Every structure is written in structure tokens, then in C-alpha cells.
Image (cartoon, rainbow, N blue to C red; front, side):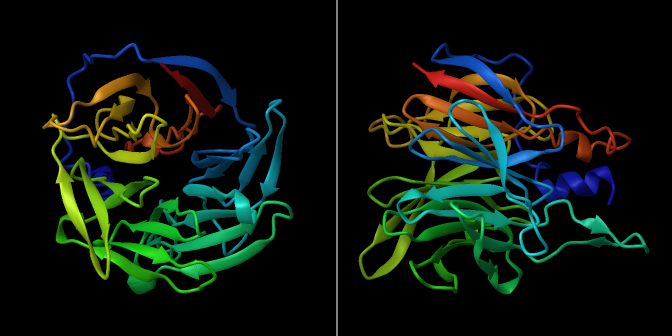
Length: 328
């Protein structure tokens, strides 16, 4: 797979790239970063517990780190043949379950040079013991990307290759199709990030096209899907969550331009159309996911872009970080 093919796989061919000069809004302060152990590469999935403990997963391995409030880092899970990546993590603290998605994003090459990818799946891990509780394959060759949880313990999963959102009901072992819309479709990567508001409304991002959608539950029928008009397209929208004030905080991966950003959009603001995109931070290196508690935001800076640059694939960064911000 050459660089063009990789970029097409990531869906960046149609992305809108900003100019090199950004307006950065002074509403987020960068705090000290967390440096990850040298043995841990390409962070992606991230979530937190109420006591401040962080859980970090990797794009290229199933390893999951645990970082307590004092900064002590240990390994909750080392990965295995069933859980070989942790690109999204969300914690159901009430039930002690860490949910994650495990797609083989980069794949491996066979002896003949063929690119091979293991089938994507969703997994659940006991946060006390590190035991794998469930591994659920994605249906119909789908690609598990990001997750959101509801208060009952249900799990919503964006599917990047099928134009749908899946739902795993509490206590079940089979994914069901929850929402389908042709606007979710893409030649390579469609839906990426997902965030759920307390009333059940979801926001999802189309990774390739730079668009956001509201997905609104309806009694006794399929959810409705509404495009969110934005002042510009987002260059690879990815991890997202709602802040306490109801605004959406999300990462802009920026595979083509390389200028990753942390954004804020008040997607539910009445009378504002198109929606203003507030840039909280720039020059992040492939930001892919985040978690929020109060006014603090932790962002996984994956630094994965070099793997997509011809001639630079083996230039693995020697340090990886979690970037921290405080919203004003």
C-alpha cells in the first residue's frame, strides 16, 4: 500500500485543510503533559474513573495502561490474540467494566507482501482483575471505531465501513443496528467519533468528509439523523465528548496538513447557523481521542501520521504523551 492508498484509506482526500494560520481562542490553558512509558506506543483510547484514574489504550497493541492521580503508571492489560488494539475506551464505572474497540487499523504484511487485517471487534474488561469478559466481532465485516455508553450499561459503536451505528444492549452478546443513513457512508473511513448527551441524543463525526451529524432517538421507530451545518469542514474529526456546558469538545486529526487541533463547537446553540468552530489548541501531533472530567481535558496525541508518510514509516517517535488542557 503506497502513501496515496494509505491516505485514501484514511479518507483525507476530500478533507478541507485550513491555512497555516489559525485563530486560537483563549479559552483553554495547556497543563503539564503526561509522558508515557517508552514501551508504550501510539496512544488512542482514553477514559477516566471518578477518582481521576486514567486508562490509555494503543492503536497498535492491546496494551492498556492505568495512571492514578499521583501519576503512577501500571499495566491493566497486556493485550492478547483477541484484543490486539484499544482505539477507543469508555468506562462503565458502576458495573466495573472497561469497554473498548479493537480494529486492526494498520494491519500487517504477509510473507508475500499482502496487507492482512484481523477482524475488528468490541471487548469488555473487568477493571479490578484485568480479565477479558467479552469479545464481540463486528457484524458483516464492519470496522469498530469509537464508543459511547448509556446509563443502563448499553454501548453505542460507530462503524467506519458500514453506514451505521450499532448498539449493544445491557447483558447481551450480539450487536444490533441502531441507526443507518447513507450520509454515513464513505469509500474508506466513514463514521469515527461519537458522543452521547444525557438525553440520549448522539453526535457522530464523518472522518473522511469532515461533517458532524445529530442522531436523535425516536419512540417506536428509527432515530432521525440531521446534518450539523458548520462554518468549515473539519479535517478528520475524531474523538469527542460533551463538556459540562453542553458544548462538544473534539479532536481534529489533520492527517493531510499535520496540524492537529482541539476544538469546541456548541452544536445545540439555538439560532446559530452555521455553527462556529472554536479552536482551543493547535499543532497537536495526530490527536485521536479524549476524555473530560469537569473542566479538564486529556487528549491522546498518537503521532501516527509518520506511518502514512512514504519513507518515514520506521521513524517511530521516542516519546508519546497525553496532553492536558483546562477549559475556561
